[in-house]
Image (tube, rainbow, N blue to C red):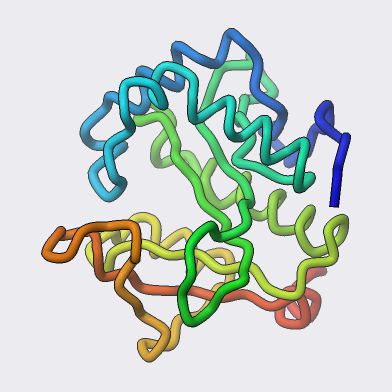
Length: 191
């Protein structure tokens, strides 16, 4: 399905999820170079860190009507990170699927921005894209992201855990825990 909603903005109480702009490239590169931010993520190539990843998000937005959007704080338009939805691009027992994910700059940790932005993205996914389910995954040791998944009312069944096919065997990030949220569950929780 071809989409053209590339200028869309998704708002929450304190944040805006929006398409990427040139001014986001350096803050994104800085965030992606932070070892603590990237602790549970595969490192980006120099090309991706310098803008290739952002370019792909804009392509996903054009093609699918969703991406990992740039997140800015409403109060001062400062760059907070990236949060959004993407079609899962590998084959696993739960695919095809759409995943939600987040990467927040360390200066903004501990303020509740990841769950707030993720809730806005989930709302968009279920209300505007009519997705039937949204998934999220990480390594078991990533307690912070798993806490966000729990705050989003996503649930985990240990039998869904999987070896990520894009991460080499023996790598500490290969084994992933999977969380799910169906539209039906979400609607039963929504006010």
